[in-house]
Image 1 (cartoon, rainbow, N blue to C red):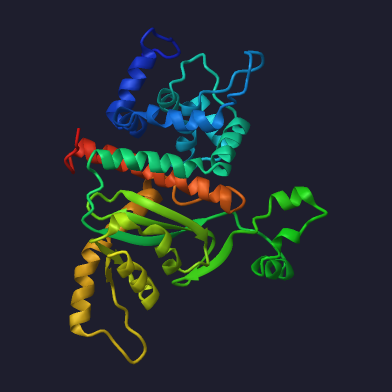
Image 2 (tube, rainbow, N blue to C red):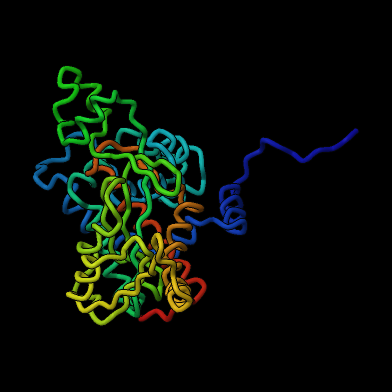
Length: 353
């Protein structure tokens, strides 16, 4: 008679053994928790999200704001919906350990997560939390300031099925008057997202315009617009006095007198790849210059590529620019958190203590 391994018998140390095995297999959330002190975000979250006018302890107590913040990060790291985030946290040991939930603790439900993210978006807290972590990175000397890179990537949103006349009204800025007699339908309609076409591919949603530190590949600043906005339009809000005296690398989408003037007004040297035009091919000298510039400029693709391949991609399941801005802010912050963990673990840069 064949003897099989004994199954179905729980042991005292089963959770510890499973956790240790997850660590050996490579648990990214465990690495993140070991490198980042998430308590740094608590003051900002509690100041804006808690009801400080509450006089008594009656009623249900809120979930810890840092726990909800980490749950929102999990959602974007793994590309989950609110409902799937609730299910997965209930089911997965690695998620529960990252959130600090014991076996008897109930996971926040999807509605609670939605309300938390909505508050983050309405109050601009994603931008504030991003800035808080950027200040921490700068204090550690990880914002190298030896050149910047700027680029944009599409952020896909749920595609709308509108009539031609409805789309014309949205494009003309009159989308707010549509579906006035159908409030439930109107809540599901995104009148801020736009269609765009690039390299033969069609996109619908928004754009994430990012400025990246060339030395560390950390995202320093970002701006979120609708998808049809040209990349060069976001240069002005992304550059500032801290970039003075540095080179700024960008692809040929940023060629133009307006961008050049904006950069030079801030004391920034443009390093923009040149492009050919009909009847005016690039010279050998221009091609050589482009190759040299691209060695630095391509580093921004590493950041976008990490998000696409490891963090579920630039995708939002929200309606409207305000919520999209909050979601993209959390995605950019998640990237910086993982990049910081990688820098520390692999000793890619010296960290000031």
